[in-house]
Length: 206
Image (cartoon, rainbow, N blue to C red; front, side, top):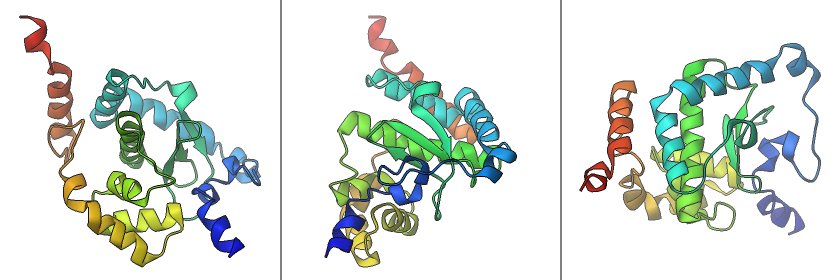
């Protein structure tokens, strides 16, 4: 029984050993030797400056009153399991897994995914830790991926994760905010970013 409670209270920190409040670990020697954190931080900087997906989400968070600053809200760390990144609600930080992200394309995709979590947390006060339906909703993109993500971050059974995803899939899949379309590629993401920046300008000029 205590083991079950411990697993539920873990809140996904088993995937991010450097910030585990029960047993924080230092960055591994080989990670420091090969400069993984430096490389990761450089990729984060490029994504923040050039990815239309990322820039749209940053603008949306700023308009919602949750401006994200590179030095404060983004961190590169060593991760365990299959995690590629995460959003830490306790610190409002996005964590990029420096030992899993090996190129800029993956960084752009992972940072976009985690920024969606941060945006949902900002605009809708999503309870990732206490409400599995909230977690399922913010993970919903592809059903199987959402199920795997919930199982990894919350240590839920496959049956529990599938039930949570099925309960929210239709409504959450159709919620594309702050995008006005599904940004399948850079071209559609640029269009979505341009449209987002133009929101409300008609009424400002009346």
